[in-house]
Length: 347
Image 1 (tube, rainbow, N blue to C red):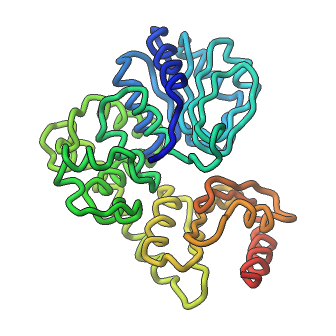
Image 2 (cartoon, rainbow, N blue to C red):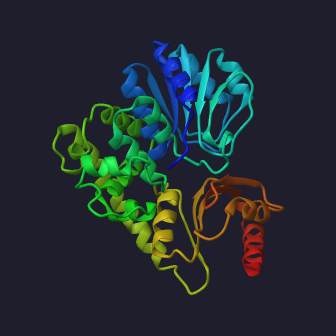
């Protein structure tokens, strides 16, 4: 059984949410992040949401959003790093719920199960479900999108037997071989592109009552979301086919594409790891003077490896044990790949 938040932590978050009138929610731009927002927003039915499509740290530049909305409380969901400057500059209570490497900051209400147990890497969409106690399907979409089997998966099967028709309890099979996984991909794809279009979809999701509305297009809102998904999926399939052409016999699958396309590095790396579990997956997207990568491996613990391959490179990287993000300057590409080759030869 997954170890989430402690009972007193759940109650404290609930009190903070109930004790405000106009909260501002910042959330990561992936299924876990948006589902976390939906769970808390649908409890409160008040406030505003802001998607975080940014590097690892949420900095003081987001104080302009605080000034714009003038909330009475701030919630940060599924964000690995938040600067002390933002926390101090907000000048109101900040509630930060996360599951990445624990952080130590002042003047913030910080909730992360890994503070108590380093192995308790439980998605935030489950932690928020502990608080809301409703919308199980939204929580399950978020955890599945994070390659994690929801602790209440059996309850979910009984409630939505068509969405998980088999008995699999492997996160990768839930994601790629069930309608529940398709929902997670839909949630991921509708967040692509500019923030305005993504937030329009998120606002529509706040009104959807059941998953069949989307999968079976049973309502105007569900049809809108599904049509948006289909449009984005065409671009994704083109990139997936191009990446598959790069498959060789060695243990690395590397593919880099241009910034003119949507950011699919995380989506592509997940699917390619599912198809080629023995390989190290590295998918990059050029953007300006940078290349942003998603790295995956079912065998290696990635953060220590990333620290070594960033040696002498202007950039940063990190994340979970088997799924990480990396960003480097284009000028350092050759050094980065030389370091990578050296490290792979040691494996």
